[in-house]
Image (cartoon, rainbow, N blue to C red; front, top):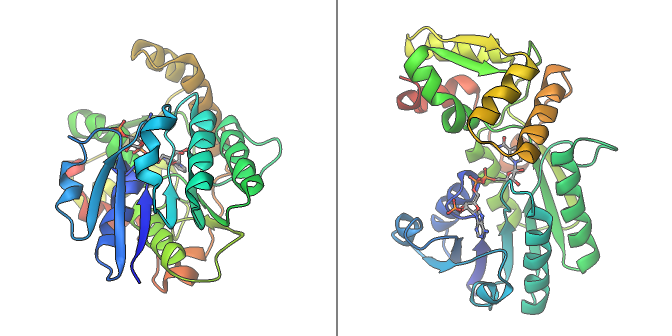
Length: 290
Ligand SMILES: NC(=O)c1ccc[n+]([C@@H]2O[C@H](COP(=O)([O-])OP(=O)(O)OC[C@H]3O[C@@H](n4cnc5c(N)ncnc54)[C@H](OP(=O)(O)O)[C@@H]3O)[C@@H](O)[C@H]2O)c1
């Protein structure tokens, strides 16, 4: 029997990879939940994938996406009202009789008092726990893809990575490995009620990240450790809202203090494959940096 898996945030960094990997499997109908049908056009070309429009702030727009969905891979965006959005999604999942929610959370979401980013995720996790729907929480470390999404411009133009992280090490993970775990959890058995902390194979400082990019691409890249007040001023100049700047600077302070350097073996245990190293990631994404 075919099962239908809804992926929310399906055009995002993790969601699109989950859709891609699920589309390679037989017996799965993949429903890609997208914010805009135009952005979701590429996903429609994948085998077994249907694309549906979703607006997380509008419950009425969610009905079609959840109808007859057996399982959901749930991504909510980095937004100030993300917990409200998530509650709306969980309510719709319950109405539709969804049998399993796999939620993309964040490493450290279980820490008390933790940081704001983690507290938002934990609030959503609690709402899912109380919904009665079987769940699995994936708590990944920071994504390797952040260096492509947020730093590639200064790397390409100036050969520099500006971040307020000092020499704190972070166990960056490739989002392809998060997706591989998500696919295993969504299609395998025995994952209900589990919480998985997911990291890459090693912890690196941003200085080591810059060295790796230099070594692999042949282009010299330097890390510039930015004082927190300068980072805030730069964000203000780019019209980053205060709530977002506060949350990001708090995250960077945790990185700086070395609290994000723990490495787990979960990816290999769950997928049977070693997670991608940062070196492999750069090799396969050279265009983002040169
Ligand atoms: N980045 C990291 O290092 C990191 C680490 C750990 C955990 N996380 C967590 O990962 C999650 C983000 O995942 P990601 O990076 O894959 O996301 P992303 O690339 O930012 O994508 C977010 C997705 O949600 C969609 N979306 C945004 N607002 C929406 C709305 N109102 N209605 C419907 N769809 C909407 C976006 O579509 P449009 O683009 O079309 O709006 C996009 O498809 C966050 O919860 C974050 O805390 C991130």
